[in-house]
Length: 146
Image (cartoon, rainbow, N blue to C red; front, side, top):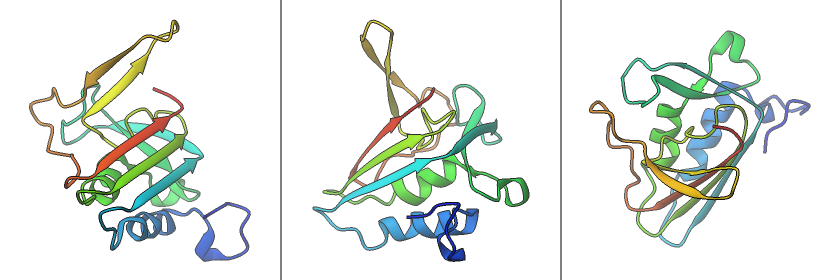
């Protein structure tokens, strides 16, 4: 767990520490493991340079030091905690930030309207979208914002 009021510099939510934490989360995971990633903080978006986003933007998490070190983009999050998931593992991500709707770059998004009706949206319609699925595991993301 990291928080910006931590006295221990290794527990501050800096870009380097969040990256280490993401790698730690999936390191050595095995069938039967259930993983949880929770982020509550600032999120943003930036221009999508590899053309794998339907809207032309990568979603980002903003670490404590994002103004000097930069943001963590959805492509990196997917490569670090989604793609490595082996068969039999489950990742639950709860993201409470702006632009968090597709911050894990999952292949499908469930969209709800104000009446409670939902529809699944294929997020891989772009001809440039790389395979960003898991390695057989299941990844589920609950997010606060489109």
